Length: 166
Image (cartoon, rainbow, N blue to C red; front, side, top):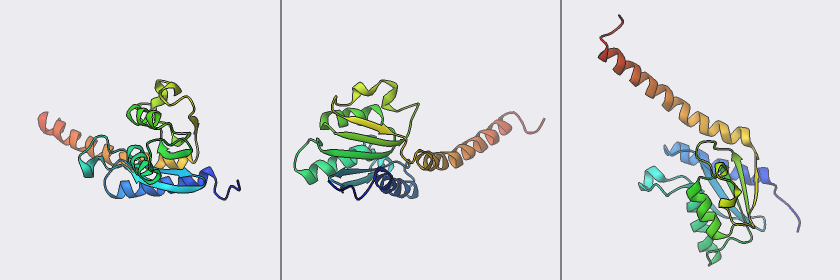
């Protein structure tokens, strides 16, 4: 089959979804699911909006894709996601029998690879590092301003508690 689009193209589509999440105050993770060079699902994190800790981009994309396909298996599909999936999402991808997973940025704290590829279906091919700099940057730019604000509030609280600049 002729390859019109490459992994970088589809990861850019996932990054566009991550940008939507960031604009909505969500952790900026985006995902697209592709079958035969066609995007069948687009999603971004919606945990805040939906008050649902399971509303990760991967889960929402998986649900949309299985609805589109009319079945629960993603045996011919590739998931492109900007951040390494967590263990919960890896479990869902296992049960969905995803053919291929491509992620941009590694997540050393919460990513499934800390536990090994065995969390995914044995037939799932894993690739990573596609547009990793861009994927890391969108996550870092989201959390850095929040970290500065938290530190500022902590400094104010500590200054008040300890009585000012002594």
